[in-house]
Length: 330
Image (cartoon, rainbow, N blue to C red):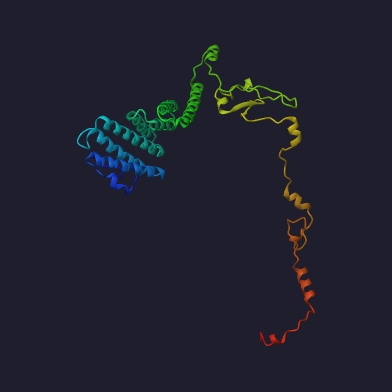
């Protein structure tokens, strides 16, 4: 059996060399090795060490397939043992799909997920991985189908993943619909206007209508027919609308006259030339800060005043030196 792992993105070898280079010759030792590989692969995924996780799961796939085809154990597995090995290999394929997806090897991730669902058509996580790989590749239609298959398989089991799968399916479905509309917008052949109207897809959101606000002013949130060239078929999906003849965000809202009156004039004002202001400013007093025009106490130089005050206060002050202190200090 060939050895995996040391060439799988791990320069200089790996501390998993003992299992990656193992070559079991009988089924029991091979099964023990698979369990060890799965455990180490799980730890690597949790630590986001996806290159080694891919190598470990790849080795597990190799050993599992060896048991199934008889390369290991002297003969191919049959009956219940064969079904168990298929399910085991489906799990390993699904796990390696996850590792490859995280490594950006999207096509290989998809291949592993497809192999997993082929080995075990009831394996929910296999379809989930397939949906993730398809979505990453931009195949949103295939992603929807994979998630729907996962939902169907989950419904036959415990149903614990159905809610999360439905969320993923809705995301993929929205992406697929957006792509369909963009393709239709860019590649639709020219047809008579009557046929175009029949084939035109129904917009998921109603066109904005004009309305009258509380102050009696009429809002102009209406699509301007003259600006059709700027407002494409897919803009309503992207969240655009036309306000006063200009394309803007769907959440754009014009201020009412009452709001404008309360807010006042907020237009930018020209700042006066600082040089002109300085030219008319009063001269700076000696010892004061040039920028402190208010003449605050903190900015005055009080050194002279403090010195004079201390000298005046201490002049003539006398103090008797205690006899016990005489002779100290020379």
